[in-house]
Image (tube, rainbow, N blue to C red; front, top):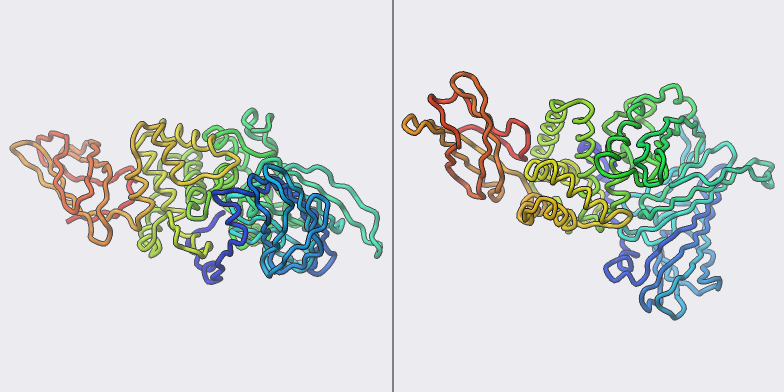
Length: 544
């Protein structure tokens, strides 16, 4: 999801701490695994009361006797297991479903429920008074309107069947199966039944619908021959009718973005890609096949291409390969941030890319969170607080430094192998490390520990001296005391007395103070030394 530091601050005041009623059964034991959701919703003409039926296909690997489903507050009318009613136990956040004896089998659990969602499905009227509903589930807010196991490491396929007033278009995950008119209801109002089906497993936080007066705009086809479903990737935009004249707007670049990522990473993983004007607390939300963008960014016509690139990159990283736990959130947000920057490098050139990475580095250096907490943060329980400079900017910079250290070939080969190994599943930080170790032939545990499991960044003070007898330059590097010293490669541009630039790279040890003799012979003192000229090190630089 797109979230810059300024936007994040407003989210943190919500103080929403995620509960984990279903997380234990989606953990390492995996005694019960939801593999498919059939979600049917009846949406009202007015108001916020919904009626739902959730049919879950559950694989049981062990002799589990209870299935715990997350569902906050809504009334549960009945629960069936394999067609038979069961005496479920309900509390304010969970449905405890008793299961018949057995192991190594598949169960079908059906929950009928209704009520007014207090979160997750955002039902409101827009600025013109029109009724709208948009799913907004991250991190664990699907539980406010979908009975399920609301954890990132329990992925499943999903099929939506939505009955709604005929003047609302319904968009959801996957491919549109049918959109058919229904007979008028008892009041004579026209209604429509819409079905969507997502055939790839995704976490519940990506399972969404949009129901609103939405106009359709066809962007065309991209990544022909580079789609996981064969053929080309169809892209579209759904907007409020009065916004149709703005299109394609920034979405003029959407085809090129998908084409680029499909070449750089792997074939596009889903059936198609829609971009939707919506209600979301985030600037953008990467729902699989149906990216939701904040309504205001359309109405003010300020949505930028970088946000589109960020959310599109999530279709690979975050959606197809999902973090195993929120402590690994950087595998989603850091990747999306960095690959959006790579798109900028591809489309605007090296100078624009370096400027973007420099700006990102400045944000990291200015952030109290980065100075106090590690990127891989297993202590934080408020998941919204993880939407910070660590998960986004420092995660991106970690990838940037890895690329610089191991080289483009090994870096992208390792990233592609990591993606291929975990597509449609979950991944941990160590899974990425292992893939990059194999591709580069280098141990990287020290690097991952240094940049992801410790707070901070390198703070350097440098000076140099020229020795006329040896014709060598000695570089003196002091590391600050705020953080433990770092180990890294430092690129130095030496500008000689004639104004010519010479590039050298030196190894800096994890020590407070050191002297390094540059591997360069000069007949006269240099004019200047420039540290990190290509913006490849997460550090501050001061001269002594």
